[in-house]
Amino acid sequence: MAGYVNDLSLQPVRGSIQAVIVFERRVVVVMYADAMALDITGPIEVFDTANRFLAPAGAPYRIDFVSAEAPLVRMSSGMMVGASPLEAGEGPIDTLLVPGGWGLNSALQETALVSWIRQAAARSRRVASVCGGSFLLAEAGLLDGRRATTHWAYSDALAHRYPDVTVDAEPIFVWDGPFVTSAGVSTGIDMALALVEADHGAALALQTARYLVLFLKRHGGQAQFSAVLDAQLADHPPIRAAQEWILENLHNPLPVAEIARRANMSLRNFARVFRREAGTTPGQYIERTRIARARELLETTDLTICQVARRCGFGATETFFRSFGRNLGLTPKEYRHRFQLISPSGFIDPHHETDRSPV
Image 1 (cartoon, rainbow, N blue to C red):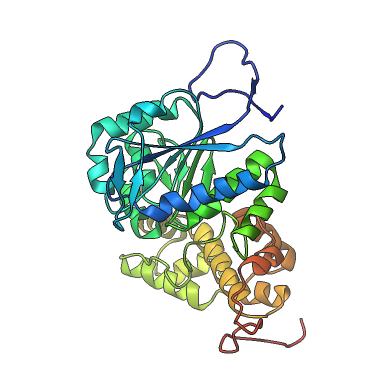
Image 2: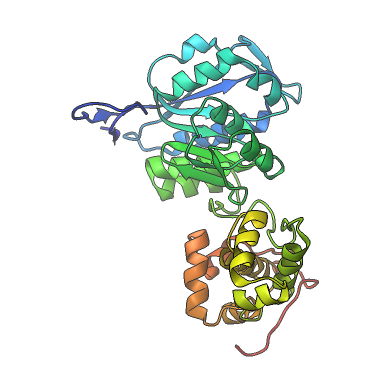
């Protein structure tokens, strides 16, 4: 017996659900003209490599390619990929995979394709997208009321076009129920490794990552880019000034009442206007900014954890650990181990800040 899943449908089912014995995991990749090849080849190479390490009792991945442009689909790079007609994707699906690419705008106009994705999702145990593929899931109404991500350059467009979707531009992939959305291009590999781990355990995922010469299997909480360096400041001058002052004084306690006073606003009005302009409360903004600065220091310096906590304004190391874990699902030490920038010599880049003073 290879394993069990409760149900292959995403639709509500009345009555008890019988366990289904899984002898193989069918992965259906839906393609369209000018999709990005790496959005497709990255994840499927992970699944194919995992197959080669699976024990005889393991349920292997069977990968099918379908497209309205069958039998050959031209990728944006000019690569031609063979595919079967969409009708070949009928029947139960373990994982439906939807890529992004430069042909996304045209694909969004293909109502038959969007409708097929919606119907195929109802037959799938889970649905995954890479990069702009999340737009196709959202267009099909599959992400309404859910959290999702996409390439950082298009996260604002996704949020604007689909207001019922909670867009998080930070993580490299987001898992919400049966839907897994990943960020730009290569993050589809990280997402596929996470799917393999969910299906077959961490040992197989790590073995797959090692064979593919992936130095680290990145955690879904890793940011797409530095939130400190790329922070979006508000257009409203008093709020923008407050945000800039926060960034310059993260090592201080930063009571919201003091920030409101500096903005010449009452505490209540400041909180209301700040939330309207920044999309979050002052307290949440301060915490997120502290965490972003901490991540930057963990990645680029050899400061101790206690030193990082102090420089980012956390009054106690325990508070830093709780906040960091709540936001990223990792301890600061785990984050540094996975994401610290290492030079070819194996040491931290000497051009980056360092502090070897006692804790």
